[in-house]
Length: 241
Image 1 (tube, one colour):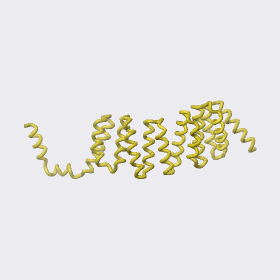
Image 2 (cartoon, one colour):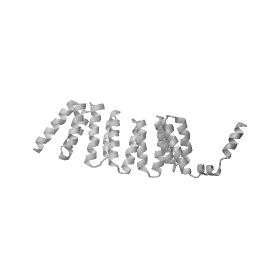
Image 3 (cartoon, one colour):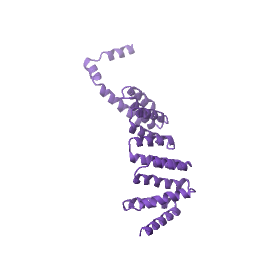
């Protein structure tokens, strides 16, 4: 009887009340997003996923839905976020939204920072959209990863793939020198070759601040190579004097 009464009360709502509930689907959609954020904030994973599943049917496309799923899983520290992001990235690439796909590979790297494939894919996508700043950042990260894992021979291929203007080349080569000193200090000839080029290039007046910053990093990492860089700088100045 109690259940019947409850049902009867629900069905007996006035037309005005019923219209108030049903008149604005968009408002219900907004409330659902609010509840999703609330559950994430309270770390209630299963309830948040339940709301997401309801919302996913109303999202504009499958790529965006997969991206939101990835964001949600990432908020809970769940590595399954990578699978959702990969699906979203593939769908974005399929629809030629390369910048969206590249950003998702960067998100994946936050969960798996040692994944070379993610870096390579992000780099390729940023090359497609000609985002030079992101190209430099990804190339520098990739160079550091290659050096850390002993794949120094692959650096030439990386530099050939990033044959952009001098300023961008220098950023990558500075990163290469610092990574070699940190992970492969025995590669003295490679360090010397890169250092000779970088020091010579940074002597230009417009790179004065860059040179100071680079030398500060060098000094902190290897006093020996800092002294050698200073010697190269003095040598170049004597030649041009």
